[in-house]
Image (cartoon, rainbow, N blue to C red; front, side, top):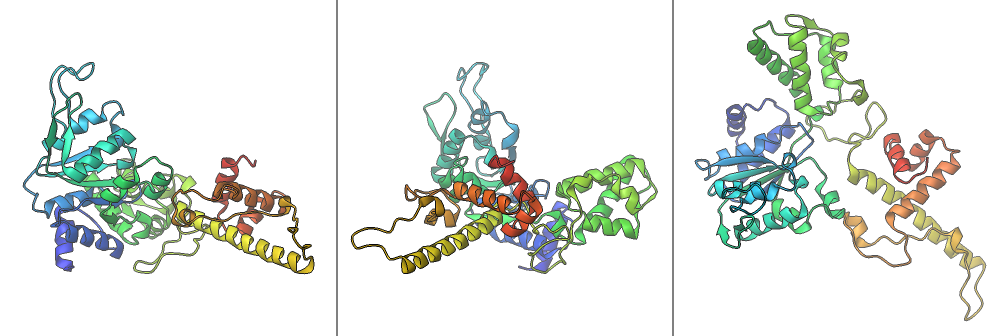
Length: 402
């Protein structure tokens, strides 16, 4: 992708930052824009996902038609069908007139569904029909209508987990995610943090007609090392507060820390352009919120224990051969029996052998036994299981092992 075109797109929409991860996401949006496909934008809350549907619409053949953004999480479940698809007069109490929905209003253009994972299952079924055939019906109507729209969706949830928990339709997930764009969290964008802080400081100074705040060397280092759980939205909020109370001052590290919630802790930033992985300064994995990585670590541990158990069974049979026509009796309480189904490895639910323990049951037993071996010491237990203490605390609470 032409770097000049990427820079033009960022300038056009006011996107600040030079990190390779951000440039890659912008390039992916530009590449898919001319192709009429559904796109799913993923990323943490506050990371700036709303810019990418605008890029896709602005550089697509639909750019002269309507662009409508809908926050699915902000619309009550009882009215969302009416908001999206419209309703006929008398369809429900309060429907005093017929009304067009967003899909009818955006005909020929683009509709952006933010927080799409919050859609009720019944609405998901309606959305799937629109994506597959372009057809929908207003609430209270039996007449099928057609619409020609492009759907771009966004979410901060793990969609595979939502599908596995049956909170989101699998067929709709695959239909929406024809193309996926991952927006990097702010903490992984390196010096983009400083560029954004400076941009916000100047912007708020102009708005409030005050002198802009400056940042000391220590403050800049603290900005880079902070985890920013709220991403760009949180940084903007912090700079706005400082622009009001520290106008014209040079913000020191100590001054900055008074505006930062300490619960998020510090973060050892990965140099821009390098692969992420390993452990941070606080001993936690670089992405502790990744459910998939936690599941994979625990599953690997369980599979290793299973191999050891099978080797033990083989050794028992070798030293204590069973009489002919009589099976070797091994106390079931001495074994942990787990045979993962293929769906366990893929992260989706699926039927397994009736006698096999579920992954959750085996995981609970593994954690319980480790706690006993370590006399309840959670730090030692987390180290033995090769998971973070935060994950262990959550699992203890989830399985009632306090």
